[in-house]
Length: 129
Length: 429
Image (cartoon, rainbow over all chains, first blue to last red; front, top):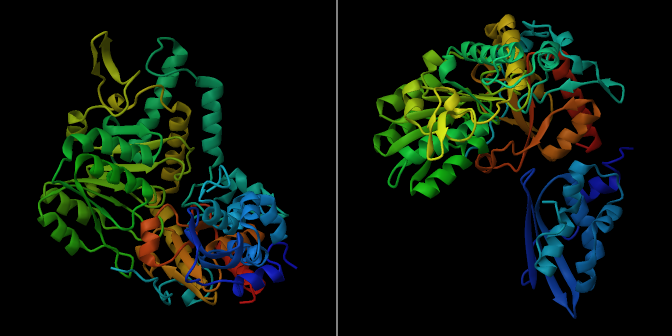
């Protein structure tokens, strides 16, 4: 068994959950990973201060795609206030694999685009692109 | 024009296609101490010389002995030690200039190619390029040969135009002629060897046209000088830049060669110590070439190290270096065809390439390719290779890139192929 490319990671990479577009949507975000040219966008529909529905779109490596896919399932129904408070450990723990410093940006790209869409602040995480 | 990735084409000229491994011209891995390292018990398979080269012991030892025995600042001291340091620094300049057939007086040490190009963009560009003028570059440039011209053109109200890259990853001389005939082109800046496509650009044909049109040429030789014979007297560029760390030398030392009549007319780039002839409270006069363009204490140990590197390359013989890397690149192109779903970009024949191949694999992102190659101790690059506009042209987000150097062997290519095939299994492809 590969430490990084575990079956569930590859499964989420090849069959990403909640991927596509969502129209109409209430919030949207788009982020680039300048290191690799990856692009990840999100459409979010909001109801009663919660994420009612969400779709990611774009392209990237197995780690960034799986991370977004896995996170999408957890984000569904989450309070926006709670989303704003999510930190890097949340995304890394959810991914469940050891992530090297160079792949950290890949692992955080999904959460970064969602937090940007929800809070309007694209600077998270500080010191990281 | 949109450039599509070239489907892998059988490389009929590769020795491998005729059966067996190529006989390589060089067998010098023992000269490079880093290859004694192991990663998880595996030997280092270094296929990222396009990013930086490894260093032979003679370069490391020369830097060490300079710092141990001859260290002093240059161009100031009258004592014997300082004179030895002067001799080492200026001696390195003579070696470096001679290595590419140029004069020491018009060979300027910089930090890297980026600084060399910025020197030209600031000290030449801001005096010579104005509103209504154009700077012509190509779609296959490294960011170092794009951004300084974007900034210059924006600042001076000039237009930045691009020569297109065709589906073979090559430039069109006809398009160059058409651009030059518009009469507004002041400068054409282009790479000698593309760091993504591997394309070897016909520099002499380009510079002849540029000169005939009354424009100035700048060539980025970062991926060329370490890998093939380069004779600047025949390439006839007005500015030619390259860097030490890709040429078996240390980081922190780059080189800019230029025509004396152009340098004489230019104002300095950076100002301060060492670049002046005299200073009083009202002003200063500039030092002679090349010192006018070397403000402050220069990278002395780095220059001395680069001098040792070009000595080492000269001893190998650059014809043999090119032959070695051409054979190896042909073998690499050939064996990459064994990998299902692999497509490479750029010219299909090793003959028309420098020693690098960028590729994608269907169903696998470049980062994942590089990560899985690393499992086999294989170092390859993944990403946009500081050429984002070109990557958009190619219609790919990122590619993996394997690049060879003088120390690579057939077994390195075999290890890469093994690691790629093992990676495909991990991905269930």
